[in-house]
Length: 290
Image (cartoon, rainbow, N blue to C red; front, side):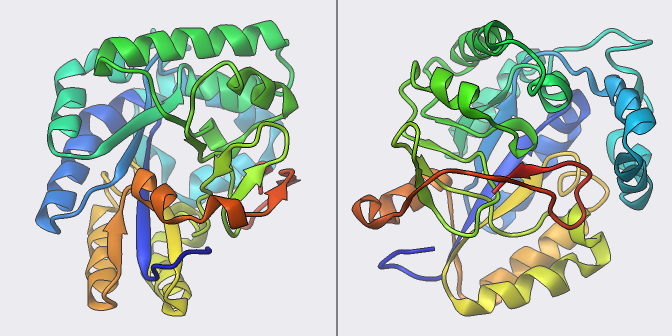
């Protein structure tokens, strides 16, 4: 990633589920405090409909393989697998206003991730533009209720966007996006906004035991990188591996930063104007924007 300052690691934490918010976020706050660092929390604010993933299990063999490989029930819990089907959908961040205030009070960046994460992930490509617009209206209003201010960034669920989404984004005063898995930052061609991508792999994509050994060598280039973290994963049963990675990063003299801080380091006038494309990355069950 281009910058005058090297060796910076952005921590992008996506909160996708009720249990991730309830249990994963407090655990991640403790870990980050232990290392005296700050990250960027992208919050899902609305209903947790994770149980609807059963549809993908039936339709997509790769999704089933991913669930088995990542020990999904261990990560997300049994109740999560029923939300939005047998069990009603609990609100995610909206259920924990005090915890949202705690994230802010500890100096972390808080941004908008989703209204309904599961339905976006499964249906955004086939829903009409009115559905997408309503999804943003509900999500942004809820975010303002929780934080007292409008978000200045958006990180799309599952890194899924299309041209209709970008057109709607024009209605909001976002300062940057983090919606892709591109290798380096760029300017979105359609809307002239800075994209700060998650360029490193997720733990669950490379395998938890291989996560540190896979990610750490990439950091030897001494550049700016963004690590995608999930509250349900690194804040759950795999937290020990996240701690190991942070210890390695500290030994490599990397500075850990929020994505807002990284944006300030980027020479936006020198970034390439590009259009995203869709690609199936290793370890994923469906294509995402790159």
